[in-house]
Structures are given as C-alpha cells and as structure tokens.
Length: 258
Image (cartoon, rainbow, N blue to C red; front, side, top):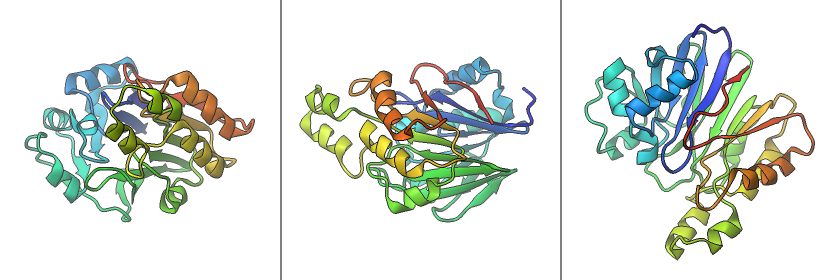
C-alpha cells in the first residue's frame, strides 16, 4: 500500500497477544509481535499492508504476549529485531535471529525517518521499555505494561499526537473477579498494569492541543470491558476534541492516518 502519511494501527492488544503497526512513506515497523507469524500476516493483510513492507520489529519486553511471532517473522522476511540486551537474554524461545539491533533506555536511535526514544517503565520484566516515535510533526507515545506512570513516563509522553495507553482493568471487576489474590495484587502493584482510573488521570496530565487520538490498550478480557474503559477514560478528556479508540485482542483496530 503506497502512502505519504503516518499510519498507526493496533493489530492486537491484550493478554493473548500485542502488536502495534506503524508506517510512514512505505516504511513500516512493528512494536512487539505477540501473535503467531501467520496471524500477524493475516492482520496486516486485513488493513491492506504486506509483511514485506516491515523493516523492523521493536520489542518492549520479553513476555510471550509481546514476542511470540518475532523470531519467525524476522527469519521469514529478514527483518531486524530491535531489543535491549537484557531483554534478549531473557527471551528463551525466539530461535536464531541473524539481525539483532541492541538499544538502551535513554538513548534515542533512528530507523529510517522515524526517531525512537526508549524509556524505562515499571513492570515485572527484566528491562521493560516505553517508547515514543517521532516522524516530522507527528509523535506517537506508547505506554503499556506499566504499574505506575512515573515522572519519566509523563515527560516522554508529553506533546504526543497519538497516545497508545494502557487501560488494563476496572478496579472493582479485578477485586471481585476470579483471579487468585496474589495475581490481583500483582496487577494492582507498581510493577503491574494501569487501571482505567490510572489511564484517566494520566491523560488529564498529558492532554495538549496537538493530541488527536488516544488508543486504549492491553484491556483485560476478564477484569475490564471496552465500554467501561472508554467511559472512565473519557472523563479525562474534559470535552476536548480528541478521538478515543479501544484496541481489541481478536482483530485489528482502526487504521489511524495522520
């Protein structure tokens, strides 16, 4: 698909797999690849892009719902995988990857025309990262799989055009749900996941004139629902003209063109 714009599309989001597609000027990358290789190909085709357009896969952390298809896609299409050294050391099932590109939190790098700024987040992984991607006047802020939004996170996400933001659980649904207590504590904790209320409050701080789209991501299928997440986070918009989207686990979301 030919394009001269900046495209963002969640291919999958949730505990079953996470994959975010970003494209500009016929140059495409994936943020995480937590589905099978064939399923990622199918979802790319569903939004009219080809896997051959992929020039990079960036991995945020080693959990299987973020890395499952990275190895097979890299080998099949000769795609470089960008990852921190510690996260790579923690990945045991990706197989051989010939083109590994290591990066570090706090050090920006470029992939073609896109500037990537990785920053540390609070999650129960070895070396988890959030990201911002900048292309011309556009900025995509990515913050999922974090238990708390630190000042560092807020600083990096400021002035985003698009926010891909975790809204994992409704606190009451989590507490009253069927998860064992230790798992509930993990999810609620500082290295767990942001709730709908956390996402709402963070958005209040990040709301700016140039913010056009907010994509709610990593919703729990048992402890949340799209309607609850959207209704709660919508309160943080305070009537502003920001479009709110909810990423889904079982199908690609809307292809956002900037």
